[in-house]
Length: 223
Image (cartoon, rainbow, N blue to C red; front, side):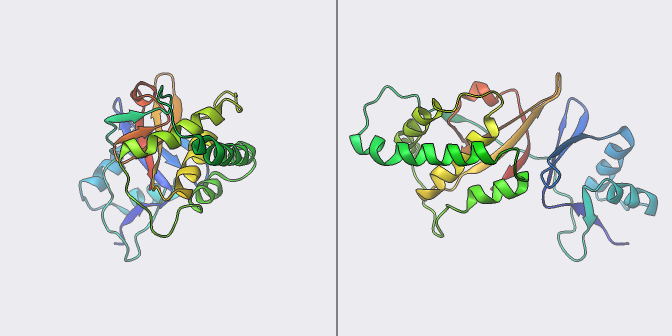
């Protein structure tokens, strides 16, 4: 029997004994029923699914036939966040930092604050990747700090609630233009249910304190 796997745009995690999914293609968070969670666990253990169980997974819209692709369901999302660079530094950076980087940061913030809510989530995520150079560079955290400082200053021009998504996408595009590859992270907490997103470079959270993401479990990581 053909096995099933998660759709490419879907991530999931287990939190407080419950299973949650994020479907980027539908811009939806979903909680799994006990029956669905049991079927997913069976799939994770490598068990053979009955036709009804297989149909149950496919009917959620979260799973597809493997069709010769990856045959094993990946375990729930795991992400380590050990450090943070907020950009709120007391250091004095060169003048060109403000002359070049600040307008660039403002531009990307204006673009993504304008697009979120108007375009599909998956489309906006793809747009945030377009600025990344073909050959990205790996930099030390100390090299990212002056870039984040300009971005943090630009954020003052965009005071709105629930702005983690446009801020994260703008930061991803802004750093990508400078050749820095980052990871977009979506996280949730269950009680009460809240969603959050942020940017990381390896295990370093960028533009936010560790405390701001500590209570959230990563559900989807977009490299």
